Image (tube, rainbow, N blue to C red; front, side, top):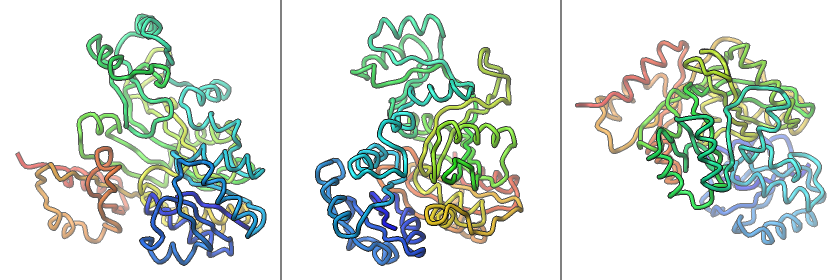
Length: 397
């Protein structure tokens, strides 16, 4: 089996996908912008071959993919598991006649926020009212109909990058002045709620094989807008209502042998036309790994490796990892150098050294939205986890 992995070195935790695939005898062929000599040894040793190129130069990427096909035979899979390269993956599938993975005509439904709502309608599942305006007049008409507050985000955006909270006419003016092409943005009614995700891996019949939930008490948009620090956490026990909704979404999008991250709002208050406080409404789908090192966070809560499960599904369409049934929780603490914390790094590590299983710095591209550095920790109870989050982010006056 031949598997082309696009950008196998970024995010850094993705090397674990490559290692798991290689350990099952799969020929993993890399294409990316990273310097092979700088890859960690596990990644270098697990790639049968790696070719460097500018991933934004499609003809160059296709040339390498065709070279791999001529040298190693038919390519069975091509994946990046990375939002930024999903369209690139689909284009190469089309040109190499690869039938696995999301096909080019369907990629819009998982990449663009207004297109995915067409699938939401068919499920059906509640989602915020929205507009993709082509001019200011259309946007003003939407404002008159829906009222403030509103939320604007790029059609193909990721996380909180480039988002706008629009509370009044002054904010609306700032938005229209900042965004030169309104049709590149979706504007939605603002939803007051906590984002809870339904994450997992599905098989070739869209059946969910493993799943978990990540909870984001502080929104990505707020973190980006106000340059905040943050925390978020993962649970291996999922609300049955959220699980049922998540499974319906996976089936509706007809994804196969994929890792996914589907975001829902859990309403803080009644929202006419959408639901009651405590109800779930869908925000968006991300049919790839959650961002940054979140897959490592998920691994901490599950108690087994999602990377290994993914490789099992690719290889044999069957999970062979023993599943952990006891409740598990993991926490990501994301701190920023600009804050004066009550607990220094040394103090925090000394206090929670038994729970910390990973720490490090974020790549520059993630720092405003994620933090300068992070800790991943495991806990047996949610109470202990939330106490740690409060202590980690508490600041000196």
